[in-house]
Length: 188
Length: 212
Image 1: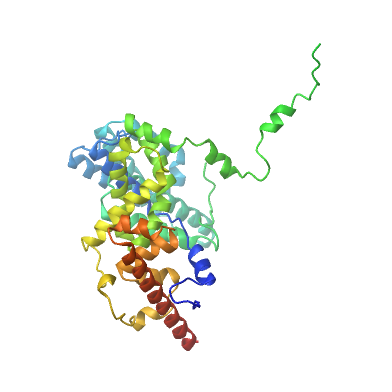
Image 2: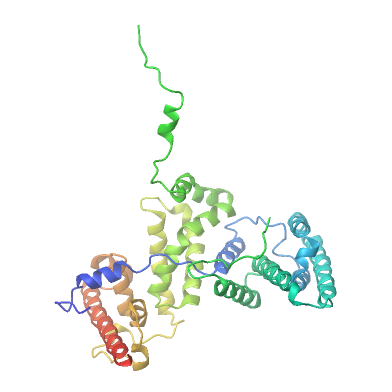
């Protein structure tokens, strides 16, 4: 890659520089951070149902409830059905901060209780397919919750780390050349 | 009497269809609102959706540029990109659309990134302006280094000029105006940057040959 003239680029160097990528995606948290900063500045109107200036207690309650949902999402998503979750999320978006936090707390508790019941069921080789499906449901639920948590608390480093770990895990699970892992469950 | 040829009813519509080489992505991009329309929605209504569309359209290019300009520091690059958007929305009303929005964002990005480097928020090597004798790169740095890595390893003064000139296509007088240096300094920085980069790459090549 050495040029004939020290101060000029060789054709090979020129080609190598031209081939460098011109685009790169930053982390997904950056968009939320930026939108949040602009909202604080007054440059953007909030679209969310939850007031970003809600008292810390309610935000903390929402955070705790969402973390319960995070843990409870394992496998029981199949039992309770995806429709229930969708309805709950729609309801969350339509409620005020207090109702939303209560609903998340209630739903999270239900998930956690159902998961505890499931953990008592003895596993066997015949159930391995269900376990794989359950794992996928769980990871999808965790990812979805982490995505939402980034919107609720964009500056929270714990949430950011959780999302990064999940994204890294999803990338590892993906087959070569693909960005999404092989799925066991059909989502609708 | 005016005679009109009878055409099959489908013919005019067929002409409106995109040619076969037009991909779905191209068609989708073509029907997205233009930057100016989105910018007006942000200025006059604080429209978050419009902002997000602008953000997703321009951030990958901006982020890659800032990341390279800063030498590969991802967290710093994200901070800079966020600040660029905040400043851009603040100043959007005064943007006169004489250049592309992308170009304007890059200009803001250079200023913010330059300030970032100046404030020393990132641990830097000695400013290349003061370098007379180039130190040999650390041996641990040499191994397995690629072009992107070599650019990132350049001293800030070298790297900023090389990125603007050799990758972004700026002229020396434009770099001089942008960075607040003379065109002569820009030229000498570029020359030094290229020599330094070649040294990094050839050292790495030798090291890798020796390893195998």
